[in-house]
Image 1 (cartoon, rainbow, N blue to C red):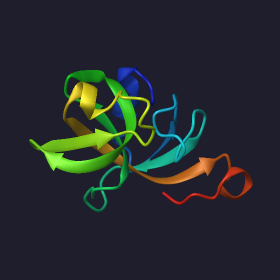
Image 2: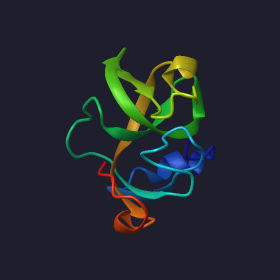
Image 3: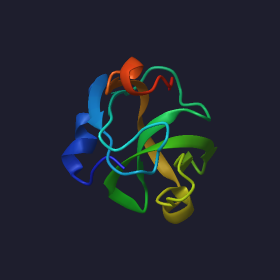
Image 4: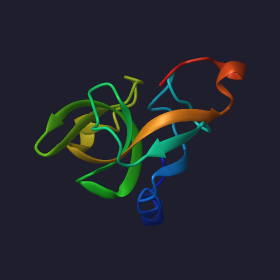
Length: 116
């Protein structure tokens, strides 16, 4: 999850946007407090990409999830933590706003070196 403020989604209109991750749904890939850069535009989203998106049934909620497959003109998303089900299993199809391209905090070499 990223946040629930509509201004967060409007910020993603820039080519690169810094986003703070909240919650445990993407652990161990991303953890609460990680900061990532999100690119809007660029290459198309592919299955396996980590994305920032908005569920059609929850347009007020901006989330960080993994793209699984295209569905109904949007994307089916899953979190990496199977114990948390706040993804497409609960909310359905989502519209991707951008693709996570880099985790910059904490610095990748210091805490864990995991490529996105």
